[in-house]
Amino acid sequence: MKDKVYGVRMEIQLYEELEGEAKNLGQSVASLIRNFIRNGLSGFNSDFGERSKSEDRVESLLKTIEILAGANLHLTAEIRALVERKRKDESDSDLNTRVQAEFSNYVRNSYPRGLAITKEVREFEETLKNRK
Image (tube, helix red, strand yellow):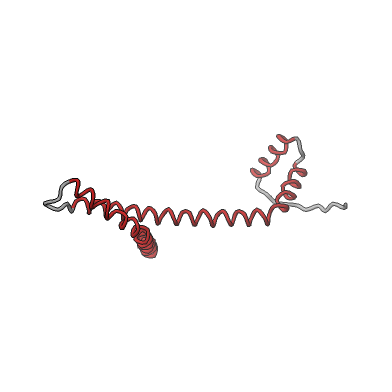
């Protein structure tokens, strides 16, 4: 196989790092560069696709966490308000029963409300960003 020589311009610091790594591995700089290129090309498309899928998954999970954080804020506020609305003639036991009965309803509604809170926060942040 015939070789082709190709010159590459790089910063001195990058070359020194490359040279140090080659020395640590007992290779020439040229061999190390060829290995980097060969390994990079062989996995470039599949690695890029996998990284892209992973990034999408992380982004999706972060959005879910934001929504759940909003849901938690909503749920906490609803329960606190419910507990503070203790009726004058209501015993602690009756209050506990009422809170438990209404709790599932609040939980069921907290996710959509958390989504709405998250959306409102994002819109507010965007408004602030646009003002600058």
